[in-house]
Length: 513
Ligand code: TEU
Image (cartoon, rainbow, N blue to C red; front, side, top):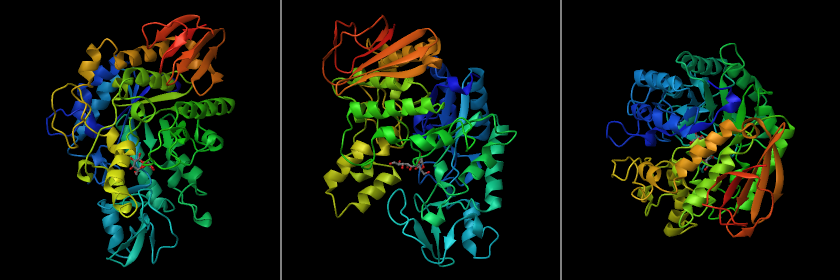
């Protein structure tokens, strides 16, 4: 395995990645069938989102047994074979660790809700009446009344996702046991779901970043058998100042953090507001400079299972899909940090299109649709869900043009955009990603160099990567044609057939100066 600082991740949403038995759901054997594809792309690490026993209210982020594989995904033997198969190809494997909550179908919750004096009562957060006005991330009150004892329990997400009480030492031990179980299975690390929420800050009325967060994360990951793991914490609250604490073995004992400022979703993901590429690049650049100054590695990503497709959000997914998808790939793969690609990003998949609420699976979108009935028309709500909803990342990955059985509505462009067709295309997005990844591995400024911002305007972004005596310049043009008379040195990669002094829309040049 390479050092974690050389990891190039590919995130897999197993329910939609590859369906090996034709039942319409992706599964673990399907991932194993694509191990050569992943190796061929050049990635050397995968993050698999939850595939544990779950009722599926939040597609696996509502876990009912942390040590069982969801039967629709396969068996424990399938998981063990998958880990071995990826390791054989030099690909590290990290799993999703959903620490903040379990499904209300978990046996712990079943016992906890039985009575106020049940030994498991304090595994969760119960109150006689809601002690505050905390809202669920998905909307609505975060306190749910439960008939069995007449009390309320905290759920930061769906009602079926009850927050664990990390102040209970037994809960902390249970979660350490979960980590140890998977470490023994050979996993190389974890992505920790909403890590910053596991410690509540009751004194300041905040559902996260509580006084014990550092102690809890170190209890999990600063132990003899876990210190070496690759750990990335999902922290929506992280900013440039706090990201250092969460990174590179800092105060929290983690290797890095997912922060989300660059995605420009401060107005809410359903806001119909297309961010400007210049804003995206300005935010990426600010993080690059700050994290470098603090000596930590940022994570680099534009997509995941919670976000719409980047080529639709930031690019032009109609008539400049190849150009914008490849430019966005360069932004993820050529900056300083640890890159995370999301399944299908490498072929420039776009958002999908639903017509009615029944076309969508995601609980977050359904709650948004219900909660905004009085405010927004049906068409407006559907348009917003099509624009920002999580189903855009969760339709079955189209490997060929052939219609496939699917648990979601099919991807409406599958005939035109799929792995097989892209591989044969003159302008193959995946081939460009492959070349970006190969360059990142080959060129020292890219895998180990510093970041230097050269220029950023409304039309163009130029940055360089420097190692001792080598320099790679990356010239990224936005929507319009832009004259460029700057240095190009030797052009190593270009998403257009040529460069004639005028940068074309979404043109990216990777230059060795
Ligand atoms: O996401 C945390 C989270 O807050 C996201 O749901 C995000 O706020 C939202 O998608 C933005 O619209 C993690 C997982 O990535 C997500 O899939 C889960 O639904 C959530 O936690 C609960 O486990």
